[in-house]
Structures are given as structure tokens and as C-alpha cells.
Image (cartoon, rainbow, N blue to C red; front, side, top):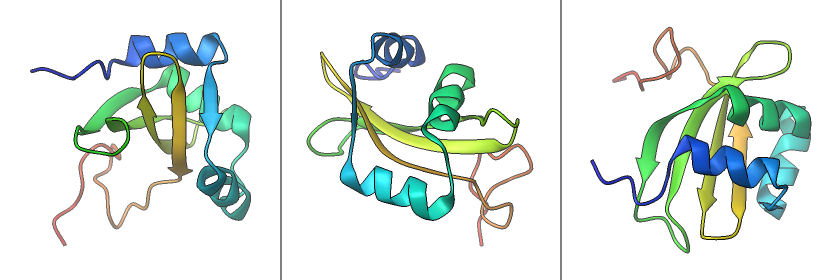
Amino acid sequence: MNNKGLEIAKIIDLLNKQNIYWTKHCLNRLQQRNIKIDDVKNAIKTGKIIEYYYDDYPNPSCLILGYSKEHSFLHVVCGINNEYLFIITAYYPDSNQWDEKMEKRRNN
């Protein structure tokens, strides 16, 4: 499958290089949801891509499932271009909407 450059290794590389752009939307949501930036970074470093959004504008994006520093499931939506990792949002997945592994959406 062509993942259009959306690879966890590339995302982690941009994160480690600190080539990160935190959207205003993301920073607002993190504050509302009481999610720390370090938890988002940890989720990316421990995570795997569970959904791809190839048609997102202006860059393709994906949903990563990882873990906060306290080992809670955390979902991070991010996109990349050749230079930057764009953190779009992050949230603690709801077990009513996701399976027990928080990897697949439930059909409600």
C-alpha cells in the first residue's frame, strides 16, 4: 500500500529533530483535555499509525495510537510535509467509540 510518505519512522524523525508545528487548534484542545505536550510526544514515539487520511489539506495526515507517559492510550492526529510534522489534535480515545485495543472504530 502506498502510504504517501506517512511512515511512523519519518514522523518520529521529524519529532526528534524538533521540526514540529503545533496548530492553534491542537494547543487549545490539549489544554481543554488536560493533555501535556510530553504525552503527545511520547504517544508518537511509542505509537503506530492506525488510520490514514491521504486527502487531508494541505498535507496528508494520519491517526497514531500511542501511550501517554502514564501509559494511557492516546490518539494523535498529525500530518507531514518534507520538512515539518504538524500536530493537529490529540485525545484520549473513548471505549464506546473504539475497540478494546483502541485501534478500530466501533460500528455504532
